[in-house]
Image (tube, rainbow, N blue to C red; front, side):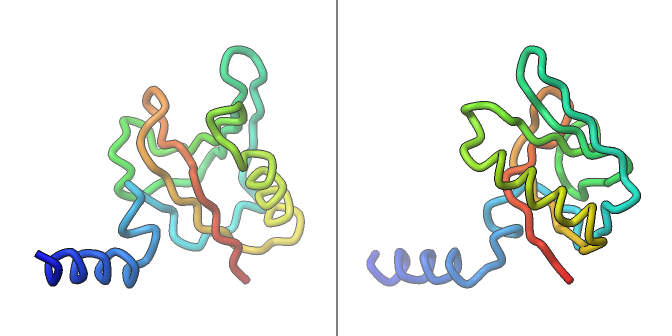
Amino acid sequence: MKKFLFAFLLLLLSGSPSLVFANGSTGLVSISDKLLQIISDGAPRLYIYNVVINNGGCAQTTPVLLMDSTMVLSKEIYSMLLTAKATGRKVDLVTSGCWGDFPKVFSVYLGD
């Protein structure tokens, strides 16, 4: 049993976070020419248009970042997205689950 648990933990730790914990991702993409929309009523959220989540498992492919108490680092992720948009750096948006029909962003990797 200990060997099985060790092998499982090793597999979990050695894998890419986007492959192990997430439903989908964009891969490295530029968002400098993409539309961002913030909606403050109901559940505050940010939509990132014309970016496709691969293997997200949701009806829509447009990612959404929830910007309320359910998403602890939403302000930091939003800042990173604005940085990427302003500087032309690429991001990899990683999602976990769906919010309605839209894949929920839970992690962003800032690339070159």
